[in-house]
Length: 125
Length: 216
Image 1 (cartoon, rainbow over the protein chains, first blue to last red):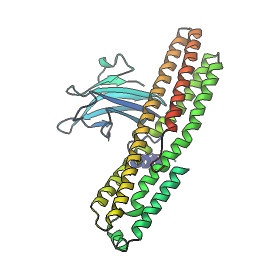
Image 2 (cartoon, helix red, strand yellow):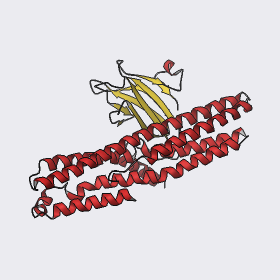
Image 3 (tube, each protein chain N blue to C red):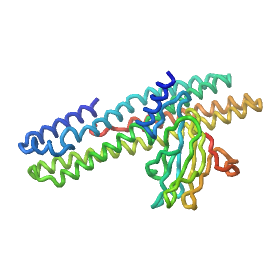
Image 4 (cartoon, one colour):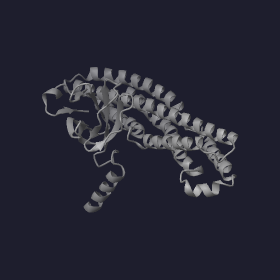
């Protein structure tokens, strides 16, 4: 039974790599904003290993499984650098603003004032 | 609904126009993205948009009913659990229009197919100039309508995200008040919240009512 559940989850992830497959803990949302909005070249962004589509008008809201997700940016050499960790909670939205003018880009968490003191920064929903 | 039937009519018309031309039968075998086949992504997207606009008012009604119930509650824990349920309803709506959801994916696919189809038609010499012009105009209009639906869904996504953010922040504030035994203030916050929810609900009703599937 557990094997079946695992293969079902695998199938779900294979079919919808970026969408949440509604595990037993449900899903929440990540709202990503970039500042400044109108930047010609935006570094490719990843949630864990899932590449995000370029943000339209500097903003995106994505559904994500409940749990901790790493927000990463692709550097010049194609290496992924962790910008921050995002805690996704059921039916809640975690807002993260990425300052892309900085090198490397920096995460600003909306709901977590002590995020700056942690490495990596941790944004809560 | 009107939207779908007009899409079907448009698809039928396009298939009729192209299949009436003798050369089409041969070309269809070599060009995979022609006729009704290239129209399928637009139709699928229109159907999904229509599903969304049909179902959203029910969820919007749930939001209104829930705010009424919250307004009449004096028990903070019951009100809090009602807000939590309300978050579930808003999350459901947001999930449907999120950037990695079905609707956005299908919208991008429909636009991509339509643009490629338009490009192909612009270089197509099979038809009479007025026939080509007619088909090009039809596809241009469909592209405009698909882009408009996508923009409206973008607005809906921003509104749902804002509403969800507001609900969770208020809920957190109520929790903080409860922790310091300020139940009366918590009730006051709950009352303010219901009026904010009603305003948001009105705005959403208008917004969703304005979304038209391509072809409608």
